[in-house]
Image 1 (cartoon, rainbow, N blue to C red):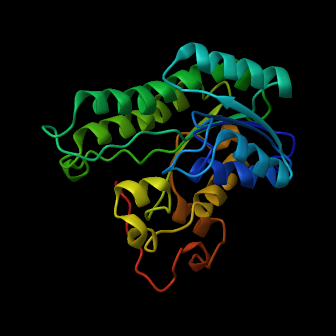
Image 2 (image 1 turned 90 degrees about the vertical axis):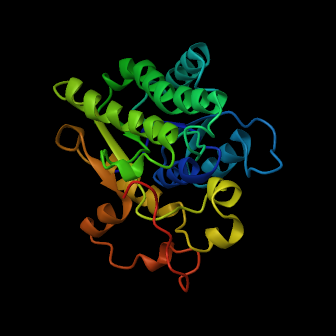
Length: 272
């Protein structure tokens, strides 16, 4: 199955994992809606909505850039409407946009707590709700949340309760919506990396350039997402996938190609 002519609505796709998924789909000739906040270049964050669209179209896809803060319902509604009008519908939603703040309960300002919950949980729920009328009309519709497997081990909560709650909320959307829309044929799945991924979050928040060397490239997530999104939606739903496992099961034997620096030991990610 190919993503040719499929329309993907991807949040936070101006950089990182979201953009990598967009570029992989573009290679098939997909239509990609980049729904993200970055309109003008940021001093610490690479890429904008506009540069992402340029790269998507250079890769062979059709792009639509929408400046969207997914905390705001009217902005999401407008972007979904633009996507449906330009491309005739929406086949796939990737809930990738996320906010992170790793700190203990007493060290987490409420504005950070609110941001993570507004973007991660509410934004995922909101985008899913607004895209569903189009997904329900699509052939082989998929929703993919970039969120971790649900694991109630306290070790995944203790150091950053607020962040874990916000990410697990995205995964709870998968758990519930997969069952809610099972008979309608809309697939809801989650995907999470086995190791840290070389993104701006790692470089700016989790260790800097040296930590990036111990990461895998975002392309591993993109290739795993591609496999999921090309499965038959009625038979592939309600799963909590891990990128490495997806690719191994798909027959990929050489994962070293995804390493930023194959000579370094890989840094494991949270939650797995």
